Length: 140
Image 1 (cartoon, rainbow, N blue to C red):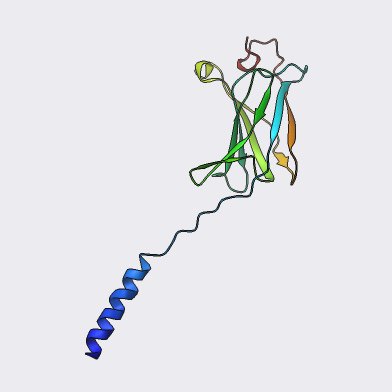
Image 2 (cartoon, rainbow, N blue to C red):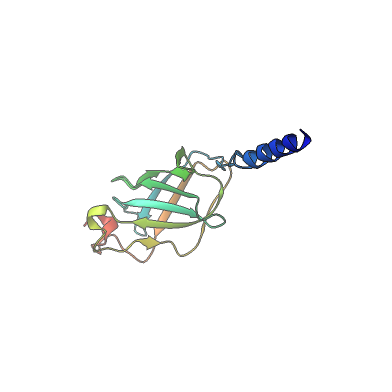
């Protein structure tokens, strides 16, 4: 009887190991809108902007760039789209619209961008590509 009880306890113990929950990290985000332009002040008129967290590269925020250069970020985390972005340091890239992606390369900002707690807006300037070069982001 004691042996049966020990066997049952061992089986229950082993089966309980398979029932542990996986903890998924959902970051705290803050609303973030932005504007991306060229050095001459003209807006980038399309594409996608991506912020990739330097501490946790699996954490990224993306936004579609509108014709006026504006964008709104959403964070992709744990198979969810969260409004905004967590504070942190990010590598930022602007990618061309899908229809132009075959012929134009993304632009990666040369320095990391810091997003501060309670920051709600950011303005970014693409350097080295004047808006009249016919580059993807100028819409020409």
